[in-house]
Length: 405
Image 1 (cartoon, rainbow, N blue to C red):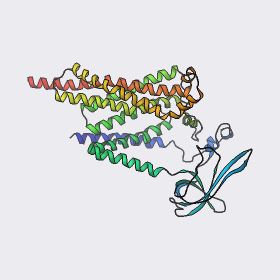
Image 2 (tube, rainbow, N blue to C red):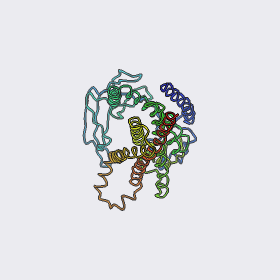
Image 3 (cartoon, helix red, strand yellow):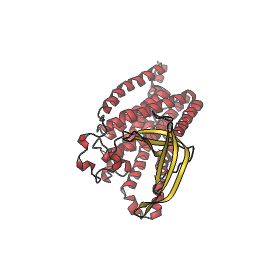
């Protein structure tokens, strides 16, 4: 019966969310650039980078380098600059031109972040262009990395299923549903201009509910874990809203956020809201882990030692929470730190004073992101413990009353 309830809940949520995602996608224009957004002012170099003006009419394909034809180094580029040029032969592996052999030329400007020296056997990504006289040209864009990513993803799924068996399969399903909610519900509605914080909380509620119910069924344990997760995330959201207002964080510290100012759709994003939504989604996984660990432990204790009081149940849950609080807080802090190692090294290299660093927009944003998420995680512990204690104690009281009768 529990499985039927779980399946019914999943179907209901998908029915509710699918129309929302398709409706949200209606706002995206059929043409990448419309006349409405192509004013002379917007197209000026001052307002829009050249890369944003490119209309994506070219075909991107994977190819294999089969021969290095020539390499020339130190060619005069003018203005005192020199370049390296590599000429190579490639075979197209995908698309309508699959099997064709092209000669491609790649120019390096001496920047290791962008220069791509290829060797025979490398899989690369090409952009194909057909000239006015019908000649097909291929230009190197990057290395083809998708095969290795898919292999790693397959290994991840395989290990989940082999080690976790049915629970692992459920974990794969819930992970897919979470990705679906973010990609087909949250992001399209953000494009429509809906409030980012509210969308993040709704997405978190749907993702946590589906995950917990799928894994454990519709039980007191899953209800407590879901409410604890939302309580912790709501606390993180409220705190981050207050701090971002007081600290004047604009949400434009990231390069990607700045690029959103120039997208062809011309959408007026709430960048501070996007920052707050990122804090909520970023903390979701860790808060879910803590909430379920506490609720599951309390449920197991209650089964082994029946008729525990509300206070005893809450105390047990808090003791469990205290043990996992430090490690899970470290999880969030280390996740953000690991992604910022190059930035931290850069700051060390220039030996800037601490008072300057702590007040820089991008660094203050990272502190707020990590700390608000961690505070939400910590607050999820007592919230989950109290809710689980109340729900489980209700069962104990009912069973006691029945035994007396």
